[in-house]
Amino acid sequence: MRVGVLGGTFDPVHRGHVALARAALKCARLDLVLVVPAGEPPHRGQPKASADDRLEMCRLALAGEKRIEVSDIELRRPGASYTVDTLRGLQAERPGDELHLILGWDAARDLRSWKDWAEVLRRARLVIVDRPGLPGPKLEDLRESGINPSRTLICRQSTPDIRASDIRGRLARRQEEPAADRLEPPVAAYIRENHLYGGDMPESPELPSRQLAELLVSAAESKQAWDPMIIDLAGKTTMADYMVICDGETDRQLRAIAEEMIDQAREKRIRPLSASGLDAAAGWILLDFDSVLAHVFLPGERSYYDLETLWQAGSRHRRQRKTALEDEDNAIV
Image (cartoon, rainbow, N blue to C red):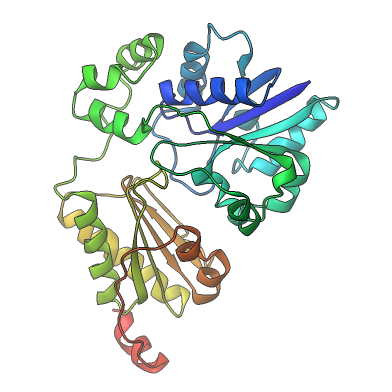
């Protein structure tokens, strides 16, 4: 059996997700698509809705689909929800099936940053579905991303341009009707009946996304961050509007930079949905402000992931590097 695997936080599941599953089912001639809600997404903040709520919303959204089912495999497994572990588990449960991992190009192009990405490609073929506003990949794009074209199917079928973050924002501002037209009716009813996304969302930012990104760059520069950069993600992904990247010399400096970003955003009544890596010497801190993602790296980690090349960076904010001693004197207060 040819089985598609469509993962995500589904926070909440919306009509774009349903259209993506249907497109892959038809385009790749799959027998079944498994929709897999993430338990603990490793590269993003924790979902706003609980695992049980997200699982139930997926089941409601897909109740009428004959060849699309919901799997709780990642919710049953403790710890971070890595795709490679999910594929291992599915192959153990379904040893005779051929797995096809369904991705948008915005996610597929970043595949080399995933845990055990080469094993992911060995365990599953790829089905890459076009995303709104983002040109689909060419053969050379696949090769540059480490993807084998012979094990990849490009699905040139458009899907609705819907963001879960936009739905959450509308619901937080009590704009239920504009949000409802992006959701399947049973999902909209479930959200309303269970009061999801309305009470614990961050306050609506006073700054547009671009200005928030510039504020974070300014905060990084005040702590002597190296080579701060803003990447405009418009038309490239739906996970955020902008990405801020910078690096520092030590883990201590990384924390100082990230904490200054949080403090300056808080002054504008904006707080991150999550802050990963603040309490560990991991060489990488990720702040998720929903519309803006901020990555604070040690130089080696920044070079390894090379997000600038991956996302074809547009605008840059640079400053001259000082000596290590000057940075150590000025960065930490």
